[in-house]
Figure (cartoon, rainbow, N blue to C red):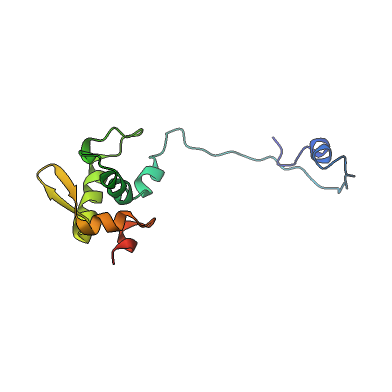
Length: 118
């Protein structure tokens, strides 16, 4: 396998522009990859606090058991609810999470909850 490009395809893409040829050498390349799948780091990097705040503002009663398209981990849900509790946006009693008046104001801003507290 070569790391060079297909010059004919390149020329056709740019309206048959002339191709300049330079002498060079082709070197073989090696492709290294892992056969094991990696953890989904995108899901771990997303903060669910703003999602939960918006769901509560929309009137979803049970956000902890909400039917997400891709179910987040229970740990990330707990962390998000805990973050909202610390900010004063929600009250948590047993397994019920409710929006506070401050949380209603915070939900109006298109920001992460930590930036929308005023």
